[in-house]
Image (cartoon, rainbow, N blue to C red; front, side):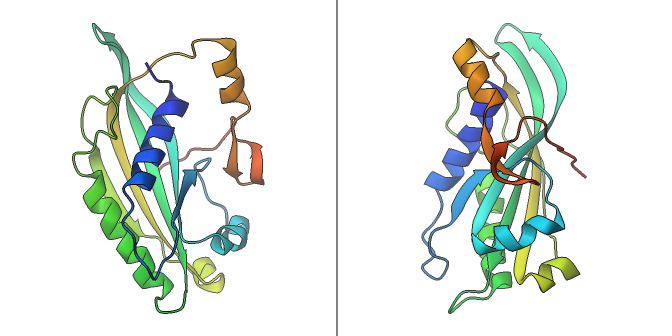
Length: 184
């Protein structure tokens, strides 16, 4: 059984491995995020665009059956793009939003732990004045998905979980264990 950290990584890997080649965009980075963007992050994140950040935000309906412990896991994907020669940030964001909308449909991410395809899938343009001022476009997707969840099996797994680093509101390469995962 995979733990929550491994399930999120499975989603990231599947999206990255199935990303279509869109010449005008160049390399699209898919990576984990703590879960809530703050305006002070926009400039540094925009410099790395195009990218898709994946986070988990909540566990609901936690229960157990013959197959193991399971939960309805809330996921979010945030697309960040910037203007590039030959393609504007809005068009780039819409192309990636289109890819995600199609890719999310009936996806089990190549993992046996996934019990159902994504449910309650929503995507929306996150346009704001702050985004315009930072010359980036953002789209956000949320969905929930029933998955079997495993425990942290040994101290090495626990150390990896506690010491995981990624992008957080404090910047890059800082521990993201205590994160704000507010989903709306």
